Image (cartoon, rainbow, N blue to C red; front, side, top):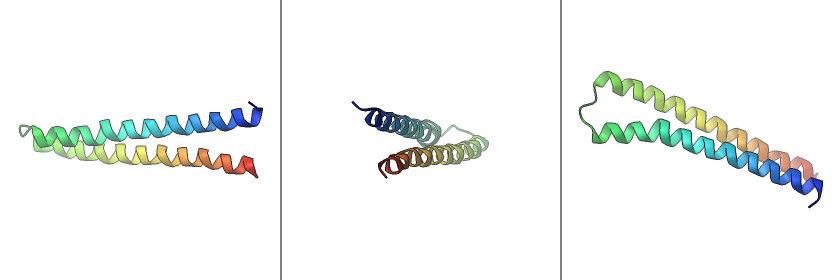
Length: 81
């Protein structure tokens, strides 16, 4: 493998890691509390508000990480030019 190909693979791996982290954060921070609150009616109303805020923060964080992963992949196009 040439150094340029190695660099491209490293960029792909970094983007894949960031995207995996984004998916994990959204799943754990947003979908898990939502599904837990659906199946456990004993959760207090005050906890639901906190869960909603946490879900919004996690979705935003996941989106930011996904966007950063896409920007890393844009570096591949810059290397080709």
